[in-house]
Image (tube, rainbow, N blue to C red):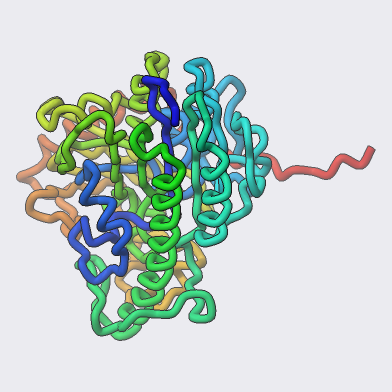
Length: 428
């Protein structure tokens, strides 16, 4: 067992989960292992990705920078790459004595070996959760005599679409929870039952990973985090800047040797906060260019959060150019749509989903601005941007968003952001 004062760090991350877990008020979701883990953890109730898409969201999780700062404004398989000089989490932790390993999925580069890990298992393409759990069991069993702290990133494909019945046995459609932003139809319920089945397999894998950590002898001195990249793969969620597209689960179990009690935190938190928090836990300080705030004070003290916090959310490229920016405060959301498009953009997997049936109201053109009062309208269904009673709030949030975009050098302020060139094969 490690005798270092710096804890080991295990970060478990998955696809497209949002907050679809029992500990976030969705009791029909079959996730008993994650429910047990939540009971031992500090559960963050208001955590947000910076983007509603895989590569940009993960870029912030692993760098502490907004996507337009680190360069990953679109999907890696469409040619987006980190800008030169950007450092990833394993690279940031290395000067503090951490060795690092990636097991399973990553979505930041086509070649996982360039991301700064000391070990890469599966080259970032060992995606299915049970395969990942098996490799993690093998890896942790080899760490029983480790004397230096490790950072282990564990990525799983689930719960990305599709959810075929031959891979995931559907749950009972009659028993699922249907969120208010989706139509409660038989098609939606069948779709959600497939989603639940994928979550159930993810949950089984997480349970095996946690059991392997116990068996390794390192549970006492390991910080374990569980999160996802962005919201669930349903219309009006993934690929949008509504909370359903960017709010995420974050469960953090401190090392048992710290003696911190489990509990919940209501403070507004960003994925950007994880990198500076882990650096502080590792005994270092976050570089000044990181956008987030350390999570460590919130782990130690439920009252540590500042009274005011505002988060910038962004989308630029997905399967098409779709520039959207938003400012999220504890009680309001302001969204600016920089280009025309449908009210709710649908990627191909969402367009072809069962839930899409009967949702033609999503197709009308969207407005240039949207404003939602989250205490009264948590599902963001009533746009108040043109309401005469809310013009002062709209103008204030719009001004604050502009200030953030200028400060961080967002290229969307200067016109269309071009996609990267299509890679060409070297024919020398």
